[in-house]
Length: 329
Image (tube, rainbow, N blue to C red; front, side, top):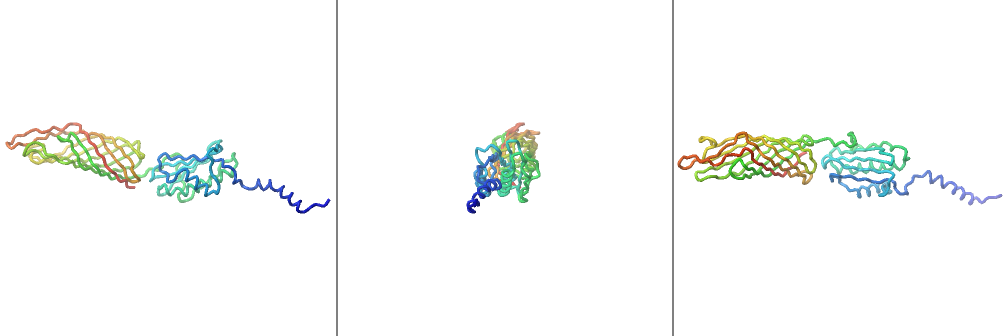
């Protein structure tokens, strides 16, 4: 029986179609991968939606499906805006298959976006090409930023920083009236929860008594050490301090008739709060009390030469400091 060559070629092509379909990679089906985005500290320079859009553009096909339950790519942002890292974890229904941690050498979050897209594209592509029973192949992050050598889930390495603070202070109990004056502090954070620093206050002087009366100035300098168990964008901790108080008087003597100045020491405890306003600016506050080691008493000499007792210092004296702080790396 004679055969039509065109018909034979058509039949042959039809027979080859199933084989070609099996050999070609699947790019047009519905994605079976779900995205789980986590940014608890609000440090990510991009959003979940923008990340999905950019990754889809890079792959040339949708990367994720909202209702997919076969596998999940988890993207977790950790650290601070200055010490930023991102962790990627690919999990199938059978369990976790691989985790990658990416850090920027400079610590800047924005520089991680390009590397995040590259590593995510490789993970998605390897997932789609590998059978469900096989583990995802090892993916090496690009050299810039380099993949972190820290174990998954561990906090980023601590980085020392300095806070320069300028503000105001209130004090009560060291002199007859409530005191107010400018204050400044320098705080060193060698690692996460620890704070070491020095603070100074220059309280505005007041006049007391009748002429010649007593004009009294008070200055305070203190060394402090703090533990900050809560030290993220809003941190709270407890401090101890050692204070030196200097008093100067005119028109009288303090504490002996021939003297016009005196000093005393104090020990104190304070609560410290830190609130991040921007990347480098913080509000910092101290609220506590100083306990004097040697309470002083104040008096002035009348025109007739008689000593008039004006005020006895209290043993425990409340102190408040509020300052705007600049963070130095």
